[in-house]
Image 1: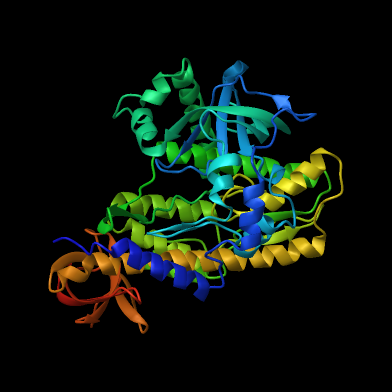
Image 2: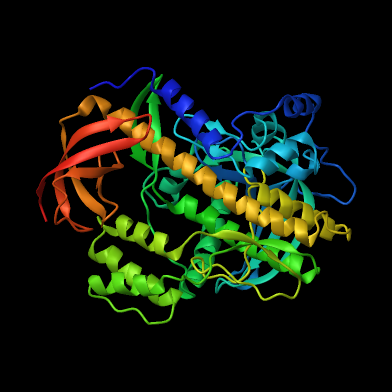
Length: 492
């Protein structure tokens, strides 16, 4: 049954209002617009002290429709199975100077907000998708992180410097992953650049080596269901799962490694930094109890490797319910946060990634903490004093954590409204689902097509997490993001 033709406009109104509800700025001020209008060129890639690496086979890998490109990568084979990986990160600070009006907007929101109907970019699109983006065919300034990945997956050496780069091919996750996984031919942009196919195969091998090392240390392999809205004109046509794949993992592995290199580099230079941490979970006892309900045993003290082994076993035993188990574990682990780290201070680390040294540095077009880190890094490279005091960094860490949480709430709220709009013409329809939450606060069920979650308002008595059910849609409220079901019967 067709949906409303004005769904996109309705979601935009909801998204705009929700941004304001959570103290985020949906629009750029006149001062930001004027500053942006005055910027007419990308930063010159021929500054003193900048290496010229435009001749390398750089390529970007991102979503099909992404234009705010933050990273490029390239590799070089070395002796004994080692690979030198170079990752270029867009030099946003070259155009967005500290304390300018554009910087003020970025500092206020701290992140781009990606809703089902509209993106609220942290930086004006003239910059984030243009003059500071590492677009195909564009010569750009970048911070380059060089890593030697040994055959055993360890990072044997690293370096950081500024360089001029040139993106030879804008590649998309899904088509590249299908080729890497052997289910489709190489994308045309891969075959159009001589040597790029072997280059990407080499990067993929290096990424898998990095991943194996992290998994051996207990990096958690979680899997949640994220959806993207599909529009046909103004009509909301579907909500489709956005699944992980080999190309996404390649970029994830490189970015985690790069963030570790940057964190250690700043520490070696005696520079304070913003670290991204996920503390040892306070609710480990509840994770242990959850595992016990499934017939598994976890140690009394938090241990990432044991938790990952439990997750791997459950993924194999019950793949359909694994995303819901993952979501429960994520909630019990708690949220990541930004913290100030002073030189010589022990690193708190990231429990979920099983790494000790970790910052955010690889997405400066989309995240303000990455811009802060970039400025600290450039000052360290030039042997200048840090552009932020320790007190400023401490305050910024708290602010960035709070605004990141607010942005996530906006995205979830608009996603719920999108699901309610998609389903509003299907009142009375029945769906197969799985119970994802059951407590005094309410009982929740996830249906598969479309991929969404709603509350069971009738017939919820006796339902437990993991039960398979048949539910009937009884009400939707797009303005509030409500979807209400009645349980018809429990099927398992």
